[in-house]
Image (cartoon, rainbow, N blue to C red; front, side, top):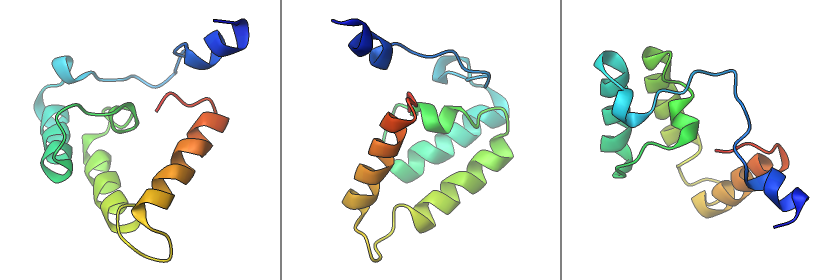
Length: 95
């Protein structure tokens, strides 16, 4: 792997406290379970974990995302996901 490729694939340091699934408890664990129930997925992605410090806000983010991002409209969900992935790549966001 060349240096540029290594830079893109390495995890950058973050100032946000990330609460991993295994260490989540109380309200954080409940908020993660709320996301899992709505998504049908088992592993909580990093973009959701970055809100772990504020589980009350995390629930609002999930509800907003389900309403705006994951609903059909002028753009399909597939196109929204492609745009979001590309923007994350450009920002070197690991999520």
